[in-house]
Length: 149
Ligand code: CO
Image (cartoon, rainbow, N blue to C red; front, side, top):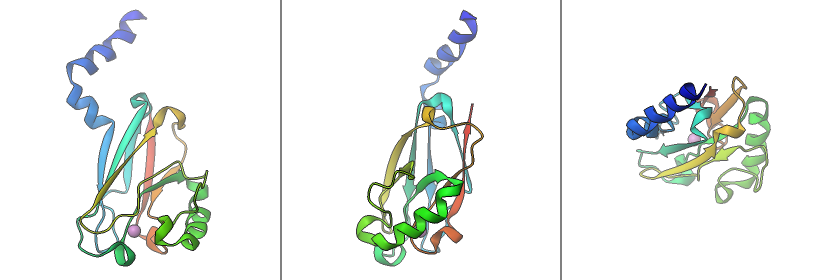
């Protein structure tokens, strides 16, 4: 028992870079309204996971801004609908929306933003979605977040 608990800890200490990469990732958006990933795996054992949204495009945020929002699959449509009323000044999200589990800022081309969220609070095998809440973007800019053990 002791050995099985200690071994992962020792491996983590031996390779801090590997652990860091496992508990963080980057997703790239574009001026073509895309994300470069449709699935992100976040191990629960990370405790916290950091997502960095990169926008290598050149368009301003009012024209082709993007964010990265995490929610349960069933909340996606209503979050996007309520967020559309908030406009870009509220990052296309209803302020204080408790259905939003994590979100970056709405960023313009040339910008990046990171968000760190607690994976320990999320449930393995639950259907979580990642999406951009700018009106109509979630049609193309949507994927799954898998919490792995
Ligand atoms: Co977008």
